[in-house]
Image (cartoon, rainbow, N blue to C red; front, side, top):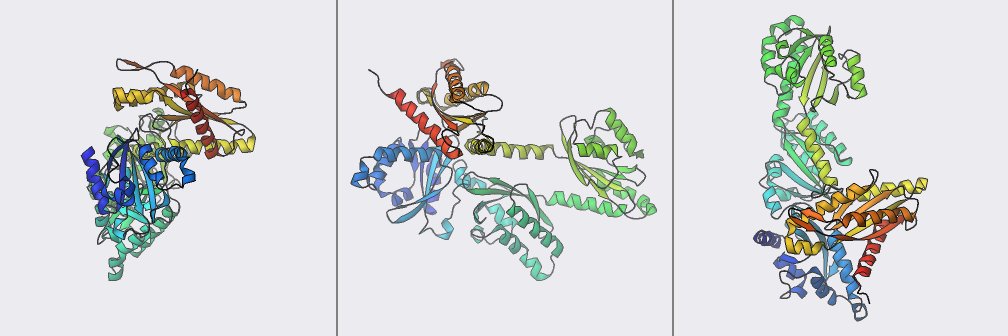
Length: 566
């Protein structure tokens, strides 16, 4: 791992980006040459295992005036807090340079701090402050090996900050630098330029894709599909990185779209006169049997004139029905008898109750009794019939849910993360301002956790954190929110608090729960917690202010407990 860190640092040297990596105890692990160019005060002084506070002391010793030096410890404490909790980049001046710094978590290691010079950074040295560097060490290099096209855009203006080589190939770029600094809309237009100039482009497809792109860049969130030259298509999935950027994955779905085009060809066949349809049914059956989707052609009288095996299998209909001319009403009766539509959305139940032949519900999703998610599409045809497709979208839904969960939860404990906790707190204080209902924020920092980590290792330490999370979740009410803020710091949002006594009782329950030993394999380990409390509206009615007040109260409590007695 140490060698990987050093190799990654050498890569960043070539980008004029300074790097220093710290473990989860804030001890220096690795740095690069550019770090000493930006911070020459550390040259010959920095060594592996040095705590970040020592690093900060050297830094501030050269920056503070003689009058300010007396309070240097206060600057150091604030610097450590920013390092541990920083989620957004910020800028500062140092030795004539304007530096932009990011502090990024590195799973399994600790945190990585990156600095780049805003005044002298060359265009080719641009690196997104929250993306490939926020991945495991060497992530930027590894992402070039991923077959899917990847892109990082800044949320402010949406300019591209980084792309991988697959992105360059997908959009026909000269190199990755031709994308950096541009908007995604410009890259999309450039990809079509050659076909547009030659007059071979599908102008309707291009215009539709451009409009889809504009709409989704304005209202980022749901995945969307884009057409590309050469009858290619991609599905674009966006995800915020937590560092001020958005991460986009572009997945080639050309083969899937070609299948859909074959399906549309089948629809065009269905528009022909009945005798032509019957004459070509053999060809159509051969086509639909090779589709991954379930498909059924439903006549205007409700007769299922054609269906494939996937249609029967995806709906758990008897396989012996294949090739039979069934009536849709009989199929629906069979499904109702097997409780197929129990729990389905009201609009779906109403649609089924009305006979299930109307084209006025072109698409819907529902969960089947076996837990699988399906997507049903209804395409009207000229003779009054319907082309119905059924697609299993279970895996797609699971992938989307995993992305949403990862964005809002701590990977180790499963608790909500800091960003999600702040959203909940913002909503709660907004409710308090409207209704007068109070709330309390408990800020917890574990006592005795560092010795466990030092003596037994991080694997045991992680299990202790999981045990603490389980204990906090067990005593919090279902309406409350428990979060891991980072490291060994946790928070609880206690809702519906009318008095400080309610919060005090919860604090007592937390202390009591954490006084019990946590069993990890054959070890019985003890941790405690220093807890700070802030009440809304007594201590403030702004989310950031409340969390800060609770943090300060926790810190004061920890100092008080650490002060020698007697």
